[in-house]
Length: 284
Image (cartoon, rainbow, N blue to C red; front, side):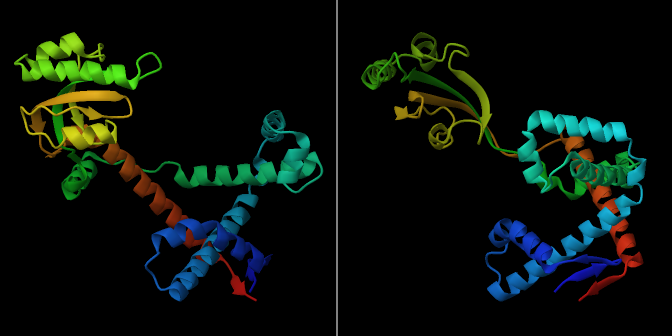
């Protein structure tokens, strides 16, 4: 099945190429779908992508002559600096600079077209930002945090496993004898920069082996000796903060970015819908 879009023939091979490009991620996302239904949907989506790309190329071509030749030459020179000439020709399936320039012109024409589509889009208002925040508060939660300190003896090229373990065992014996954890942190830890006090940490900030221990300690509890990829540790938890809603000001920039992207997506969808409404698309 081929497509004819405004008189331009698009062979079935182009659609199949798009099918294979989308397939790995598509099959991962829709793994639970009936295989026949999934394949049919993948083919439909691929066909729509090919149609949209063809319409964009055709629209961009209308203004391609306006692109300064100097800009095209500059891009060509950069490409030649980055890649061997033969490699560049093979990648673009050509044998001379003129064909390369045609490819550059086509790509730049699309870039210029999309810049026009996205030009002068409205910025999100304060009311838009606040409304988005109120409607999506569950997205804006801080993770649980704990304040933790540790005594650590690193295992490295100059401290072997046996020596590091002996050092952490000495610290543990001192703790059992009644020494204050804070005094031992200052005296024994190899983590000199912070004195062993890591402050408040959230899940995902430390290595998994460390988090598996410390996030299962209660406030005021001290761990037994445990091993991570860095060495041997004894940790103590001082405080725990439950997940909490982040304030609007803390997530304002994130919301503005999301709203801008929504506006861009809507502008692109409207643009594509207009091109489709004006196009003659046939299956042959």
